[in-house]
Image (cartoon, rainbow, N blue to C red; front, side):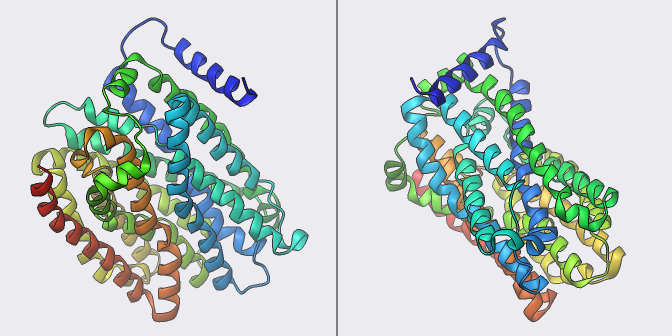
Length: 441
């Protein structure tokens, strides 16, 4: 037995030992595991995203002007989204061969290891272009790991959702995004305020990446505690959550995957338009300090948490797809005046962020797996994972880079047009899905 396999088995045994009293895992415990897991992933995500604006342009691309350095930093940022489907492909094979515990353990250690390794990244002054190449390699490692970290807990939560509560249970995994942003923003805000600028650029920015690794270890055990339970095993055995061969899933469910990948475009485009992009715009084109804007972002993310919770109640009244359609239309309207808000000084920025997070919470809260019920049961686990990868790639992966380039070339109104295109994409996908639903059901 290899060292890696032995470590995985020990992790599973330790996780099982946490519930040897034999009590069944309740939906509430599954929800806690889901929230912890998603918060850890999004904390990693936002730590890297914030560093892409405040650190990497100066550390890795100091030979370029600030705008070009940030655009190149965002290009490397996008590599993780391109690598996610590759990770899903690799780790689906690991899941089928060695089990979910092995898959999840390897994936989260790869994620934590890649993230922690970024903390030791040497700059351009030390190794030249090798700094960018090394950063790109580690970023792709994060993406492959994120593709492998799909554990099916969100699907398990949906399976256990009482009738009439699907919207409420669907929003629970989405809470991890604003919670991760709050922690990451406040941590960077503290470091920027507490350290001289040169100390922050030399070593202060590295601490959040170490924190991310520690959080990943906690999240690993929280999620393993669920995936090794008898309830999860039974769901797996009944093929509700069984990993299927990727090519087979694509051949038999490609229409559902395509529709599912484009249905959340509005919320995923909105996701980066109110998190990563505005930080880059404010940092590059205004005199406002990053610490102040990070504080605004953290407060707005709290509003986002409340909006996600509200989305669960609303979706159970009007339906999840209807909710996605209405919020996409609202985002389309928002795209028409959002640029004026962001360019309207400190008050305008605050209004942009808070209103943006209200819309983001209402839409993002119901964006995950909106069409997962359309999958054949045998392919639901793998299909949902791959659909999520594609949705993030198309809707969010290149959003910060494209929005920053458009706004720098044509003004902020062009960034609003980009957001509008995402809203239109969602509305078209939901409209086309009516025919898909008739065909399948």
